Length: 409
Ligand SMILES: [Zn+2]
Image 1: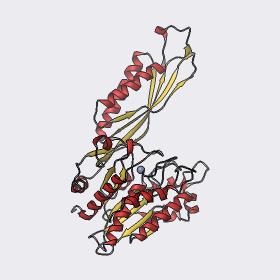
Image 2: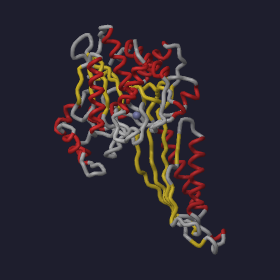
Image 3: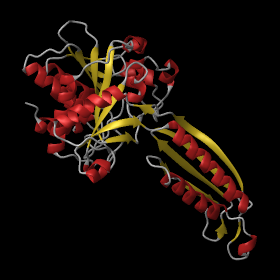
Image 4: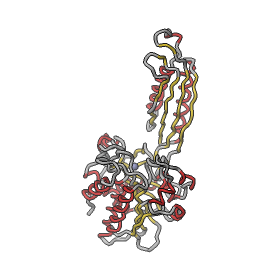
């Protein structure tokens, strides 16, 4: 039997390996990450898997299929967390996958393919500011130069790997070839409120949204808040306020597109001075790149029009950009059959946050199953899921694994 209470207990047990007393912070290649990985490796072995730490610090377990050395269905998620994190983001996917293998092993059942469960070491990118190192090593897309990135203490990734007991020279051995991995499927908490609003315990992810991040600078003229008449002002913050509302309006007009101004700074920033210069960021995400690009173009046009009408100078820089990662239709269909098999309505939804599948897409088709989380909260100690939903997620994943048929190439 799949045991939802064991799944939640194991998430609790992992949460105890934290550098933050009374909370959860576990970053890449830390002693706490080591302890968590050791715990996971133990559970993998208990579930009948061969388990080890790979050269980039991922926990890796393999359950052989009917024939030895068969290609695998890869499952898993990440074991690192953000600062002051919740207990389920990442860990739920690893622990649930192990639970499913545990059941196979208890029934002494072998499938026509192997199963590998990954507990990725670095998805959040908190310590070194670089993300997806574990999954990029697997996909063979890890640029060795990134190993020189340092943390706040000046420790490089290469050094941290050595301190962890790993050899950075061995990283190329982690690489998997296309064909060795039949598909990658990840169960993850939704990190948003959609499933709760729909009254559904699980949903099938259609794509991991692409994103663009801009920084806009508006230059007006600072002046005395008491002496400059309104009609002679070039107030950069008033212009920025219009821009913020324009960004919101543009995003609201397009389904599935989200846009956020998350940071704004006015200079000189005094109560009695007209703001002369303002910088703000814009984060735009969408499951389809074309929709995101159209929205970006609209944002740029609006900012230009607002600046022109107010005689304000402006500049827009692109800070970061990443295309979306679509989930494979054949895998979505198999996941939906598993959802329907549990008597549930199927809902497709995009993932607004990034995941390891973005990197693994270089070697295999990907799919994701979202599990409802309370009030859509994630990356926060209040992150919570019910035992019932954990159980439903596990049953759907188990059914998917059992009925999994690789697409004929
Ligand atoms: Zn996550």
